Length: 67
Image 1 (tube, rainbow, N blue to C red):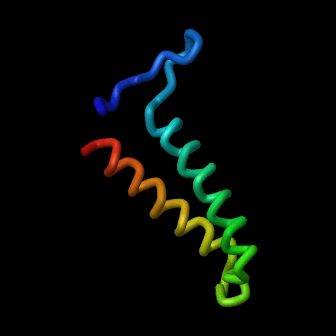
Image 2 (tube, rainbow, N blue to C red; image 1 turned 90 degrees about the horizontal axis):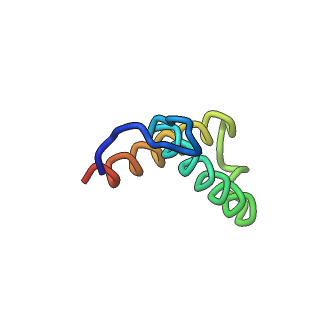
């Protein structure tokens, strides 16, 4: 994938914005799964945990899109 602006209905959008939205949707799904199996009670700081998982998912998506 070439990282250049994407024309979305006449508005140029940076590719990282779309990849960030995809990562956020993925993290939302992962949060629901984690809540269902009870993972949140083992996490010290839930917000920090969700943010770090988001960064991991986003960097993984960027690396997969690059390769």
